Length: 425
Image 1 (cartoon, helix red, strand yellow):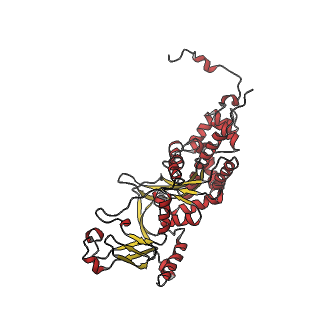
Image 2 (cartoon, helix red, strand yellow):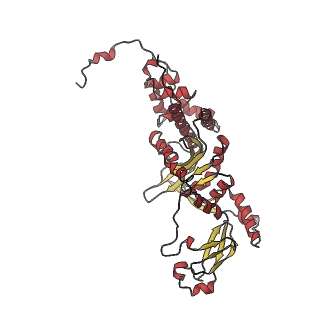
Image 3 (cartoon, helix red, strand yellow):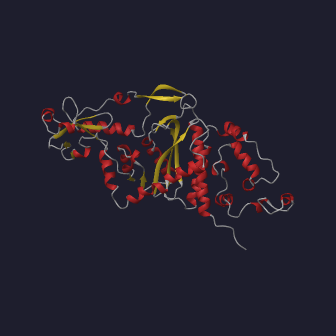
């Protein structure tokens, strides 16, 4: 016998209330005190609605929270699925829920929008990676495309070049993709030789306290940098404009730094190593002269402006005749005509300014806090809320999952932070 207690005690009758069975510091009590509704399934990381109903039937704390008595019948698990199809599908209900909880947290003054931390994580799709079709699709339009096109033509005119006609930009660009036959809205994601799968990307922005301020779901093959601008706009609309935005190296692009500086938001971005081929001069070995708008190579020759291409890069070219006899040629270029071409984005100055700022004492701690905020949010979402993979299919349902998961995480954090504890007599 593992216990000295008589098993007959299991059958004894006692007069007890449901309220007495719920510990005074249980999370459900904290949530009830913090807000007037929540989502048991997503809050406790339960994987399915069937399992959720089983938990509600046997867990007294859940019954207490939902207002069910000892003998009240809990609805069948299929009720949620039917409600989703009949009442919730194609509505913004889940976004409203997320925003309502966010506003409640803001009213309780537990949100700090001063610094915002942006990142994304991949969620494995409910799709067999071997079942796909190869397709040619049009490249997605980027949020900054219109602004870039205007500045490209302005830059060309400033250099005495003719602006590109509209059809030059409007020319349809395509890419080859693998499209899942199981879940066509997911995206094929390749991390390394062992990690190749169909997935979704959950993009999120968190504040300095770890509250999620906004989220966007995309196919897993969407580049992170394309989503920062709409995500920050979402944060600005919901809770206000941040003073600084911190993100990893994937977001360190001319478009993002240009956007943040023009919004008067400080970018907190990391150092990125040069991607030059081994044995060749690196980009910083070619010195840009802003006054004369040219580059100087390591041997002292001038690379003059040639053109601005439709991707937004200015091209600077070296003199072929001189380069052909240069002692540094083998470390400079492998081109057949011996001409070195250095490119510089029309928004490159913003990237350079962001590089300068990362050394400032005010900016360094902001970037360092990523691991305590957005990285921890994703770690908790995967470990405690089942966000490693999904059983749902389609962007709309995955967006619902993201909204409810992050809403539940915000509720838990708010409940814990604002809990006063039971009053003693």
